[in-house]
Length: 382
Image 1: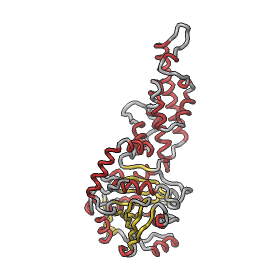
Image 2 (image 1 turned 120 degrees about the vertical axis):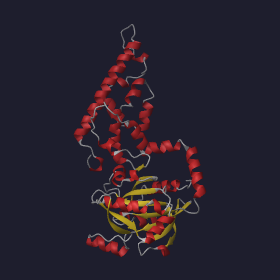
Image 3 (image 1 turned 135 degrees about the vertical axis):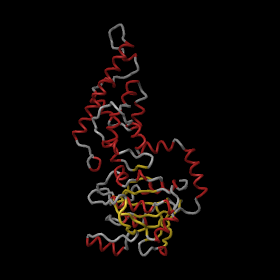
Image 4 (image 1 turned 90 degrees about the horizontal axis):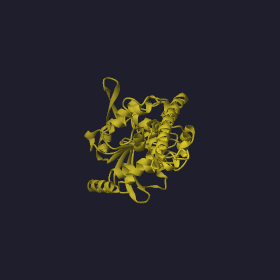
């Protein structure tokens, strides 16, 4: 699979050819069965007497596929309820694989319940249908943000009960530790934008909680109602970050202590400085700001080990949620799809609720959705 989820044109052609061939066989079987059931004495084919009440299913297969590409997943499911032919067609596994590969780079979020396996995305497009088959329709509907929101709205009782139970153990305003390279590497400051956002009203800045100059606390109010605290943790001081940016060098990360190599001598192991450990013990969740821009080189292995050090279950409750903001500076910057970013940072190996949310620093687009998710996870009814 090419970077950013791009699929080579020759692979798309193979997949389209396989879909069209399958549709032709399905149409031939369907038309044959309808003729057999509804043939009339005057020699007509009897289509009007069968399951279909239109000639849409007799259009050229290429045109049918072209029409389907304009439909949403919800529209496809509704189309499948019209007659037997469309019911079979819209469940075609290669059709849903086509939609999955086409759409997943544009999804704005993914979470721990919906992340598709890389094997599903990277397998051969024109693979045969024999052997173990993947239900691409199920994968798509489970992973697509739009259908995820629709399914959540169908379970309001469960959500209310969960929120009530969580509220029994939630006292006061929730606190979140926010850290990650996206706070420091982007051309626009996410924190500065948050401090001036009318939707995230900063109430008080807790400057006395600074940790060796690399951390501070701010209380925000979401939409004028829900208060929460963010403890911002930087790897270095502002002056050191500015100097490293000018010199195009890497500053020493003051939050972590290197403990040699771990995991079979393949990557460095990190532990937290004592002050950051104390922060991790008192927070109710974590916000990791990842740099999702494609034009720079990322050290994802180092990021993985640092995330694991921060969310270490020995420092607090294991089920505390992790919100990962896949951040770019502005809409003009190309981004790594959130599905691939989740795999790059090994989030599927975390035993806790997590979600990746696409975010833009300059506009804060997507940020409020992420904040709403993590507040709901800690028991705040929105």
